[in-house]
Length: 330
Image (cartoon, rainbow, N blue to C red; front, top):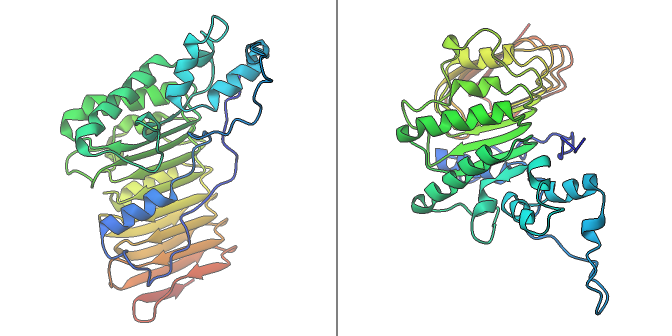
């Protein structure tokens, strides 16, 4: 069978942030920090070719490789380049559809510059390309990154279709950011909670789904890393996510758009980072595996109560600022 997981098992968090770091006083600064911290895709838009053919030798030796090897080659190409291999010869025609697809919307731009995001006028074309790729390829999608969007209420059907396809076609790692900020009334589709193979999920600049109306059984049975950036959510939404993510190890809430009473209760959570957010309270109620807890105020200078209940493995706690953080242990 073709490989289904192209990305290593290692997990990463946002870079360590000192409280006095410049540019963290507003939501735009938090969003830029998130962009800089996105996981790197497992494909390169600028591969190096180090085995040129001998002079005069025009033999096509690559096409003679076993199909499993050719699928691996195609799966490590940017999506548009992988699709182009179907016209090379009859041997390559079906490989793109049978290889796992890494889909990164910045790779669809001219030049494929992964760090460049288009202006609003060009973002619509990129979204159409994403829709076409999701429809055309049967999956699986080990890695998908959509950070070029300017989606609004007119795109509700597009959003719903994207997540339906990602769920049924086995997405494992997903980065999904809207620009420039969460739009009131435009929520993420509830089908987000129907992606059973997700291991890493980064959601930025979105209004969270209404978790109270989700069907029984919704959740993330395999999710190990969750980053919520500039997200509009309520206390109950965070509690719900922790409750339906039984193997979650890393949680990051960065630049929350709402004031939170963050209640941490999870048997598997090892590391939590709550930064650049308005936090009334952080309560570690029951986290037997928690080893590290990071708190960075950044945008606000409000008092935050930090309650540590059951966290027997907690070894690192910071940054605590006198006059801002009130500790209650036990």
